[in-house]
Image 1 (spheres, one colour):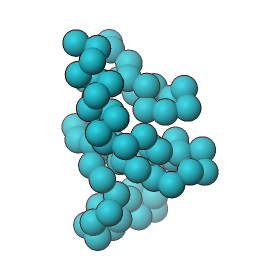
Image 2: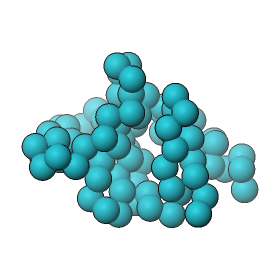
Image 3: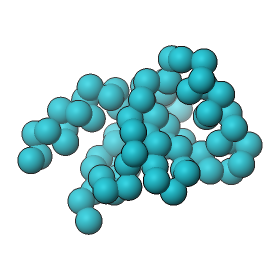
Length: 79
């Protein structure tokens, strides 16, 4: 199992990530709100602005202050 740092020392399993998306679109905002209401939202921003949203295969949604571009560079640089 490979763990990826999503900011502030928080780690997620790379194999469980389905998508990394930007939080700017209305459909993504609705998805985050619905996930929050179901109790499946994990906020890993430490109070900072959400820069990326990780959609996991377990239907969890993780908010991160790490931009999708930085996440891409981190995973590409480790291979």
